Image 1 (cartoon, one colour):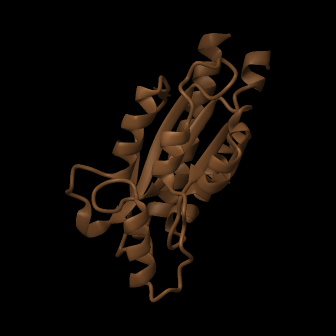
Image 2 (spheres, rainbow, N blue to C red; image 1 turned 180 degrees about the horizontal axis):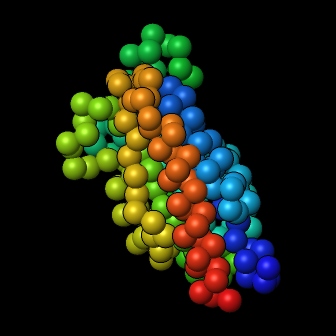
Length: 188
């Protein structure tokens, strides 16, 4: 393995209100782990300590779709209220992480990105999502999309995930790892 291949690690950064995005993130990471080293990071931790991503070549970022985009403080508060207060309030979400992400001027940080989201099965025909909004912000900062973004469906806002979507997350993770390894071979 070349030095370039050894530096092909990844991080899956996620925001999760009801646990569905976290489940998807962990399945993506499990699939990726079959081919590359990967760590799973909550967006709040990544905002608090951006250096947590210094040693990765790829960031897979995801969160729930709220009102056809990434969550906002108001939509997160609404989700907490809808849950009857059973979900802890979050001050930081995917949107805040995307905004805080540094421009891709540093050759030592992540180069590639891909994004995912969860959204209700009822919203599958809606053309906008958290993953699209996140990809738009991140690519404007100079990051390259490694593989196309992906949505995973939940039966309603609180879940559960639609049958087969956790398995799909694992398979997508395997594909991401293969694409990252292919990039390492091209760069070698």
